Length: 253
Ligand code: HEC
Ligand code: HEC
Image 1 (cartoon, rainbow, N blue to C red):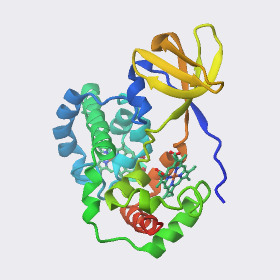
Image 2 (image 1 turned 90 degrees about the vertical axis):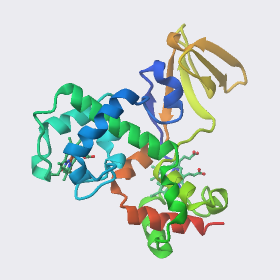
Image 3 (image 1 turned 135 degrees about the horizontal axis):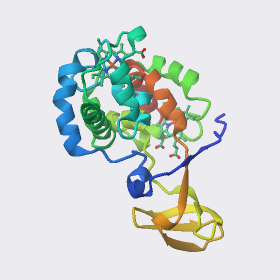
């Protein structure tokens, strides 16, 4: 039976990116920087991390916790600057801070493309994936939060396309109604469902049924990170695991 996971409260410190956070994607990548970062990545990193950062002898960076936690290059930049000499990654002391930032933005943009715009569509034509192995992986890594007879009972009917299913497993963005706690300008906490949340305005329907709207910069919005468990799993999946899980969940109809 799936035990409900205690959500970790995640403070949304940057209301100016509220609407983007709302979709679970973190900060909006800086497109100009990402474009400058691409050739730097190809030249310095692709040999180990793959042409599109999806991994070769070095890890897949689109599922790296370092990359997902990074906001503006501070964590990725550190790894680039210092390397991981023990783990087989050399330091890059000659890349400037600006260049490290550009590479970080390139990676964020790749994550966004993969998560958002269906680069996983190629999975619709994938033929690999082993149902029995997927079932095993699920029992070991997913069953503490999910149940195939309860919340995921008909998940295969909900997402019949392999590409969509794979994206749900790897990037279960949750654009549905999101619960949040708002601290009002008067310092009162209100819990409810976010009706609207962008850089300018926030509307919350509180649990007693009343709706209230504030300028976003006058309040604090706390959204529980329900998907923390998924993020923690990202670095553990291999592509085979994902394909196996996809095949397995597609059988649940
Ligand atoms: C010679 C191969 C090699 C090159 C070149 C290389 N890396 Fe790595 N990188 C690795 C390996 C191997 C690891 C895993 C090391 C570890 O975790 O101990 C790694 C780890 C990382 C991580 C941390 C991943 C995580 O979640 O822990 C990041 C971020 C990263 N590399 C980015 C880059 C960037 C950006 C470049 C180019 C500037 C680059 N790497 C160049 C081999 C390389
Ligand atoms: C720590 C808890 C946790 C773990 C572990 C976990 N999940 Fe989830 N998963 C969630 C939450 C929370 C959601 C979001 C549910 C929602 O939107 O209401 C979710 C959503 C999903 C969805 C989308 C469901 C839908 O109806 O859209 C799929 C598919 C999924 N998870 C598969 C998996 C698989 C496969 C694993 C194991 C590899 C896994 N999850 C591990 C908590 C977890």
